[in-house]
Length: 73
Image (spheres, rainbow, N blue to C red):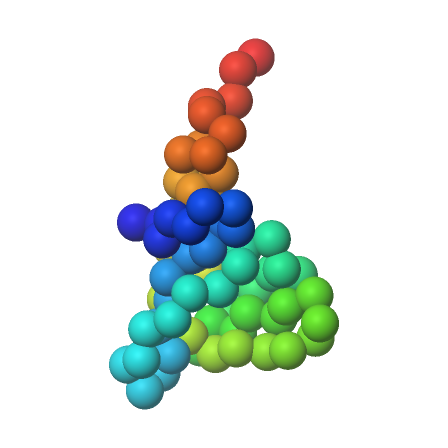
């Protein structure tokens, strides 16, 4: 489930050491499986997390839907 804040699209992730934290989803430049999941932020910082890329994509989409509503079309 996405972590909700007032204005930032934060999603909860878990470092390989088990520590949870949140990251601003809008700052994610790209994600890759190497086989660990590596998140690269817009500032080029890299974060290695336990969650698979597909799970993170779902969290980002779920957060966006909760804030902006479903896509109509």
